[in-house]
Length: 214
Image (cartoon, rainbow, N blue to C red):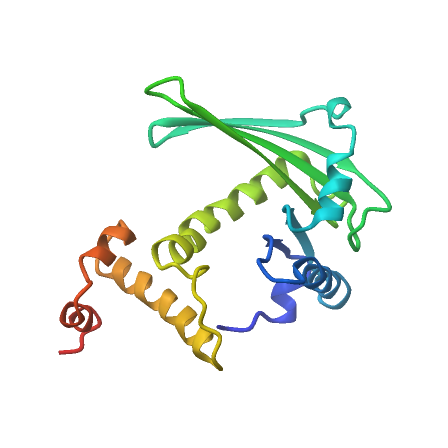
């Protein structure tokens, strides 16, 4: 992976998702401190259930008294998605450099029927209100979810990366690299649906042919 230069990272916003590691919150604290203190960058961090104390603190905030500052509605793929964004400035939060907390309520409704689903996502950022509005944060979060859907869901769902138990030496890194190479190759050859493409290349001969090896 190409290293990002100091000039490229300075003043940039880095969106971070929850890590599925034993000491996830500790690692995220280190990442936040590194970005802000050493690289002059900013962060937007999703808060998940494995961050119990921080999640509990965010849940205890008076969200009923905090107005919705940004709302969007989009239609596509046979459904409508409505997002309502609440943002509040904070001090003394259990996370380094945090200046604002975000609560995004997403509701998806099928256009063909009445079925609907919803979820609430919370996040923290070191950017103060004068540098990051509710609309800005909603846009950054949306872009991050697109990456999550396009990249991470393919690696986790289609290629089962999260379920792997390989831990020997450099094998996890090698498998992760292969998990990047294969989808890129499939897209370069015109496959739109990665899952279908994977099912079409299950025997060794077809896989070798896919990568130009005969």
